[in-house]
Image (cartoon, rainbow, N blue to C red; front, side, top):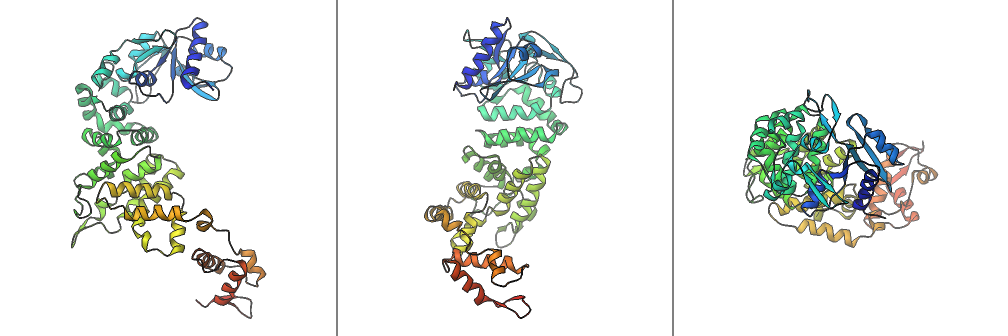
Length: 445
């Protein structure tokens, strides 16, 4: 199968053969020049949307009013956009009108110079109308034109500037940084769904720790995540957290984190958000019940960011249970096996590792869980049930709430290695739950 770049080049070839201009555009050019592997390839062209659709067999018109068509090659979508200029942004989110234009005009309507580059894969030539190559060399994020105007057009660019600077390890140019700091509160004019998407990109790419620090320095963190902003300067017990305050701890975890899932990234960011509300100075600094409070806050934050039910549930789980692994060595075998098989346990274990490495550094509980996961087989952790509800009915028990108690107790005994056969399980049930004359059951435990 051709590579993404080869497929994108084929699209350019067909457009050029039909008499149109066509180039790679935006982030893929930036990444190529930085010797990074682009995750996708966008194409800018003089061809109108209807002409693009005529040239390719499989297309999806995702934004014809903006001149954007998806061309499907080998099942992979490539965004093909007609050169355009944009009218006034009246709502800080989208242009009031779009006009098709020349390549230079298209480049000058983009956000940052490093994203305003074109590349001709047929001639192996970069076209730079905005000084993007110089800014790549200088390692700066600079707006195309006046920074305030660019940010005012689409307020999400405030957050995107930080994300790009963190991801590329660049600085934000002085004019853009000043405008960003002055306009930070306006980020909430953007839909929370778009904010959430951009935040997840920042958290799941390299430089997340620097990104969080920049969000704080620019005022964006206070605007979108005031719960995380409250971690700044929050003291922690030095015997467990020699690294310093809760915000420093969170940044360190993000810096250690490698290729996280969205759930893990948000779990790291939010795992301690319950600490400000539970701070107490007793015999030492304490945060009693901060996992419970934090889980409630994490759910509210995920809902605000429009994360979706599945992602929200996982982040809440990670926040609520991130201290449980320290109890694992003292768990009975049955409880430990149930713990190890929980949905999301692998992410929880990684969260524990990051939490420990960014604080006291004692990985004994983490290693214990790793050892047990290697020691236990899948069958030992998730054994086939020795009894079912139907088996209990055939034994003469009447269905009811007690069935769950009986079956859970049987599985506990099975996980502990006390019973291994269905017959022994039946004996266990008869021993602990007696049948009554009226066919009801009563626990004798």
